[in-house]
Image (cartoon, rainbow, N blue to C red; front, top):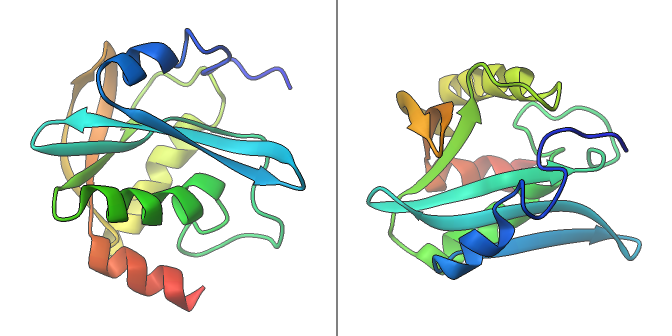
Length: 148
């Protein structure tokens, strides 16, 4: 599809993530993979939705809580079950936008913070890329997910 961000297993650090004890999730729609994201140890918890990529949004239009994103809607509940009480962090690029979408995603997380779904922790370099680091509020996330 011409994506430039995470366009290969090497660019995604796919095997490195596995070697470090992380894992990957994929979502299928009509037997076709439409979304993938990784999970790895990060700070005092886990970094979820790492290397995330989706071919298209969940059909049905926009969602006020980002539940039109395959990974945000379907991968995060699995991550929450896996990591139990550990913090879950999600990062967004602040200026590197090889995909043409990452800066919009970063702005979306500012909106999600206003709704209490995530909390901005800081901005720092993560694996060589300037990132905003957000902590997921699991309780609020699960509540709004149930309302969608």
